[in-house]
Length: 304
Ligand code: NAP
Image 1 (cartoon, rainbow, N blue to C red):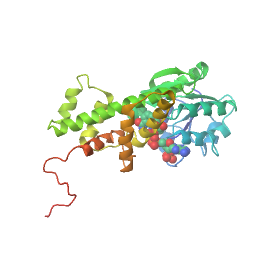
Image 2 (cartoon, rainbow, N blue to C red):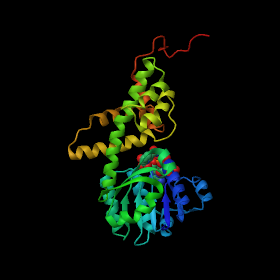
Image 3 (cartoon, helix red, strand yellow):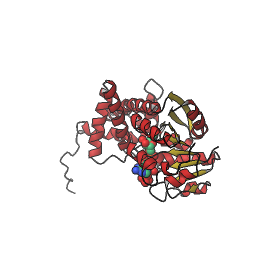
Image 4 (cartoon, protein in one colour):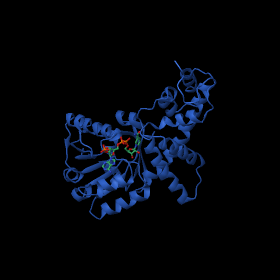
């Protein structure tokens, strides 16, 4: 495999980089906040001081950071990838960001003789850990062919969706679909609990029928427990819905469920739940329910 540089060792990036190291890629890593590379150094990776230095010693740079502005910062900011990337190198952006900005970044890199592929991923932290991500890829045929061995080390279902930016457009569709799926599972579980059904038995029963889904199987338990460890941060999904809703507005498509989920997520963000897993949508549904009979609604502690 070519020499790989990996920028962004968060929930997703750290696991993806580890899978690249295990696949035998010569690997250099960088993360904005220090202290995230220890496990990767143990797998033989090296750590660079800046994205520019990382790029200077890589043939392919993989980026996995939060949002559009963050990709811009690591590519074109001071000490960014563009400063160090040699002519003929390739950037693979696995972050979920706006399709139009992706095309602009691609043009800016092309001016420096650097190619770009967008390759946003789906499959959660579990998929990143297991190397089983679904990857939506945009770029020229030759750039995507070059990226493929890297993507095959981190993902299982890799689909070339068309030119640069189309990977992000496909990911926006994915995020719209999961909006409805998370909300549906959250509503069903809260309804089941309040109807007096044993929720684990309910999830098991539902999993054999048409209501089965990845979200029911992997996030139903969190919704039952009303605890939401990561996972996929709610704030990141709200960011993705912003991208999808903007894309829909440009095309002239109405997305009522995505708009409803965005409003519920805004409410949760305002209440401080942005860093919790997206399944915290079930908390919003719980809060919309009438108080349980006998529940203390005064907020006062009962006298001892
Ligand atoms: P995360 O755990 O919050 O990690 C974000 C990473 O981006 C961290 O390494 C962070 O560095 C870095 N970063 C953010 N802003 C930066 C900036 N301005 N400059 C440099 N580095 C910056 O997020 P994640 O869950 O790994 O998600 C990463 C991307 O994958 C996002 O676009 C997300 O939408 C997408 N994604 C996530 C999931 C999931 O289930 N988690 C699934 C599919 C796709 P610091 O450590 O310094 O903060």
